[in-house]
Length: 381
Image (cartoon, rainbow, N blue to C red; front, side, top):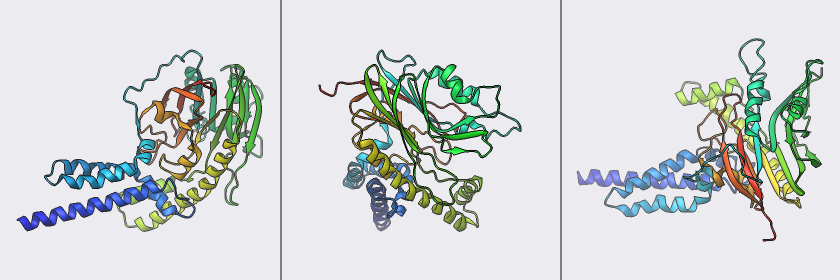
């Protein structure tokens, strides 16, 4: 019996060490260039679950006489604290007031999935555009950043979506990237910025794309005059994995360990690897361009990458993640695949004080919107 206990203990210790090492490799993902170290980036997707295992071992050893072995997990979590902090917003008293604080600047960022125009199942359905418009109006944001924004030109008798937002929602200023235009001119799509404050300057940087990509959305920026102070706001939609319905079926095959699991795994890994390769260069570009700004910067968008990724830390730099600053929990923003996927962000320069931040969950897009309030701070103080 004592021999069995010793053997069991050794197996548990070895498992703990192996999990801690894999966990640390997943932490290293934040600093390794994904194009070269793509297989480490894959571990980054499992980071929340690895953290749960490491913490589980830590708690386990606390209830065993040999408590010293808890140091394995404790040291791993201390080393990986920067990644843990990026994953979990730990503001236990986090609240969000619908009414904006006096003198604040409210930002809304949302991947609209083209107002759900092309994914609603019912024939002839017009998506959830009107309900989404109502939600947007309720937030009373000063600046709005949209990804997968869709502008319709299907009817001469009805105003376009941009015109509706300008006149009915009272956002007279906007900048739209026009990344994709249908040949017959019925619609176009891209990223967009809408503002209740004057836009004094705009900028667009197109990302490189491969020959088999129809289009990718740009990085755009607008200088906003907020009561005499200039804020430069960026929005972008970085390279997605481009999963199709058959890819989600492949994930089901992997989860259920069906006979074709190996083939399904190869398909998923191939798409993930391609996404990492494109996003790392895009993240470098966003960081380089945003760093040249002479005024406070806000970066909003769908980065298609998790908080412990190279993409996240590269773009973040010395900026603040509004959700980590004032939110609570994991803050999932993508509704498919995993409950741990926070891939939509609002980053802000240190000169902007984060007052509150919330991820909302309206059931219209495959992404959840993020709303944050900021106060301008005097950088000379």
